[in-house]
Length: 91
Image (cartoon, rainbow, N blue to C red):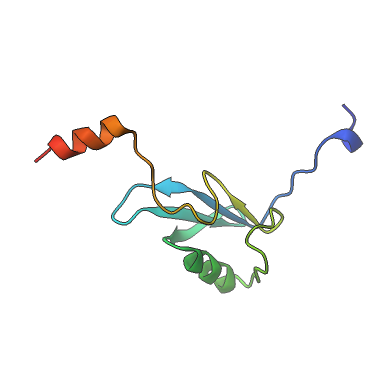
């Protein structure tokens, strides 16, 4: 495959990683390859971007933000039914 035929993969400045379990669940935010904090909502992502001087006009633009393990609406972890049952059994 030639370089011109390969798909374009952008390297956005902001990466929002998958949901981490916690009370409440959160997502880790990276800017320019560095972990800058945790986000519990889209607002937290926008605040982190603003702190680094990044204006986000479109959260769905893959050249600006890459959402890993979900999209901007994914803020809770999904557990398998068996795991939830085991947690209920623990005192």
